[in-house]
Image 1: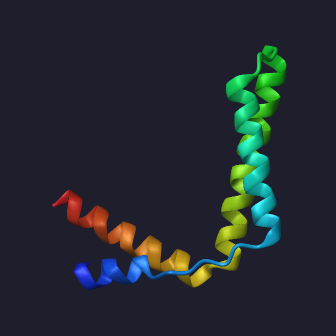
Image 2: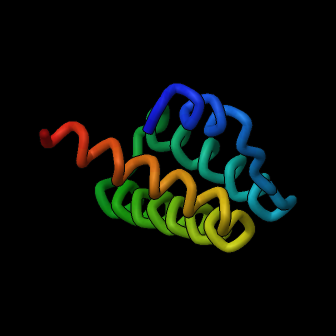
Length: 86
């Protein structure tokens, strides 16, 4: 991938739905609670599990609404890995 290809990556625009925004906010609040609050082991475990579900949900929604952009990023990453291995 050359310099022009990298510049094109900077121009990618992603669709972010209201549901995705809500998921981002809920993830931020969940992480803040995990970082700042004293929780029992059970509550911490449940909250971490919830945070992981939110991350997966966001990732799936992002991929579903931005299929072309995700393909471009994946192609860039796989190409970069091939270059790094040489």
